Image (cartoon, rainbow, N blue to C red; front, side, top):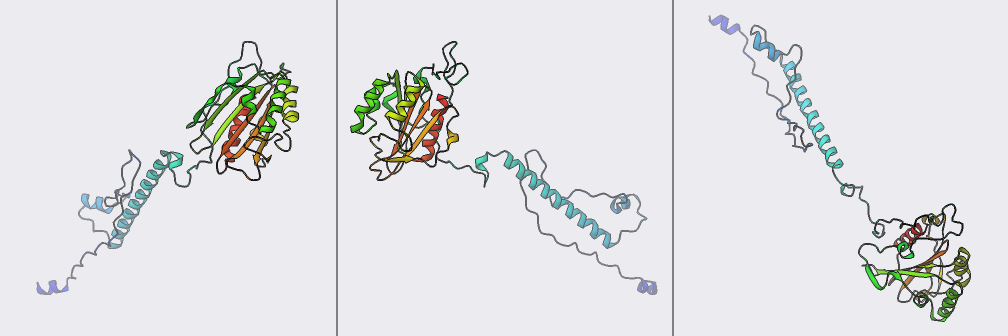
Length: 315
């Protein structure tokens, strides 16, 4: 008995399992089961030793190398599930966010104002649009007040220029004192039919005024702007707040309309207390004057936006 015992090999101690770092918990999309690294999914093979041992105790235990392989497969499977869960959670988070909430995709304001949604006014029955086929005189049949650009969001309305009718004298007051009599006389000569105007002040201090003048014909409108006001390569007659000006090089002609002509200017020289920008729009029988003024500098972006939108309403 003693001899048999001595010849029997001593049992080997079970090999300790390698330690692994804990896997952090990562967010997943709602409704998806969270992947758990501490409880990896069971990996089965056609001849899984663990299952075979439960049914046939006569089979020998698998070698230690096989056990290590199985544990490694389990750990890799768990890691894959964690990565899948992380990816799904991230994708869900981005698709459910607003564009401005996604880092790197935020859209910064470029200075444009928030104007109401624009729509063309209704026309009297049977009346064509100013530039449609059959309207050779390019006449605007809509109420001139309905063609005025509305004030943007946040604006404080000018009570004297509230979108209604105004006078030749009020329009003439936009020009330098020595030119006002000439402007009034020119409007009398061309028999201006109506003048509508709207003004407002923005929270940043920008003062805006828009005038629409309806004359008796396309030729009268063109002659008033080009000849009486002298608007060509410079603004012509100086405004009260803009003694000197030049063509605005930043104005894009695409901002206007194929049917209208825009003459856009900016102040040069000493701006004085207010920096001024102005534009004339020739649209058939109608002329528009757009003025922006602001202490310290009138911004180009909202001014160009105002001119472009007023173009659209007159097209």
